[in-house]
Image (cartoon, rainbow over all chains, first blue to last red; front, side, top):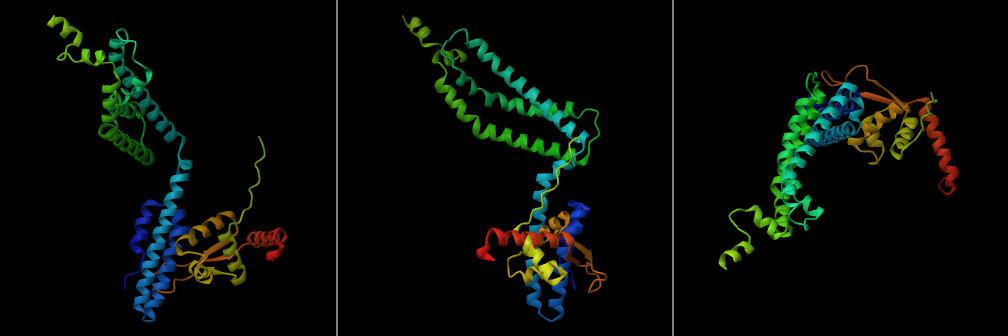
Length: 214
Length: 103
């Protein structure tokens, strides 16, 4: 006879700490096995299966609560070195992201600010998503490289860095796929026509065309 | 250094129910409490509540001496502590003072 909860317990033991296993998971599994064993020994097989399913649902609930508590209070167990390393990585990522974004915004600003007075600060915001497409992946890569240089990586820190990388990749993809087209369209409408036309060498300004015609 | 503030003793509705059951029956398994609570306690949350109450010092637990069947995990049996009994008594009295119509 296979005992219910053995597989779930072994899976939980890989993730949860010994105290959580002892206090929360083991009592739930032990009660499930005892109740299931009693039902089967009395010949009530269907009742046993119902108990097995109800026990599995209860175990999943216990895992969910443990996971939630870990997510909320897990940072309390971080060592000072791990926390410092994570802060360094975040800091070393933010600096290049801001720098690269600013550098990528400079050329159109420097080129156009002297020619047109109609460039307003909100229009400059429309350039940020385009710059972030490059700045975010490059900045995070530099942040991880320099923030973790010469440091021993604990498993917890490695998981946090990997999660950070995944979140940044998702943010970059979202920016590229959905956010970027919208400001690009808006900037095409809102930037001064002369400004837009001078940026494209294939479309000479209308004034110049009129002068050529005359 | 400032003195550490004493911990506030709190008792939720589920904790109160568990303490009542344990004071009445002296010692119980988790599933026995679920069965005795008439669906007010759930299988999935009773162990989390019991773990929290143990951390607060309201109840204590021990593993059963021998598993009922070979190969099974030993069951954990719970009983109230003196602190748990006092907290339940004070909580019940406070409830009666604040809401005498429910007494």
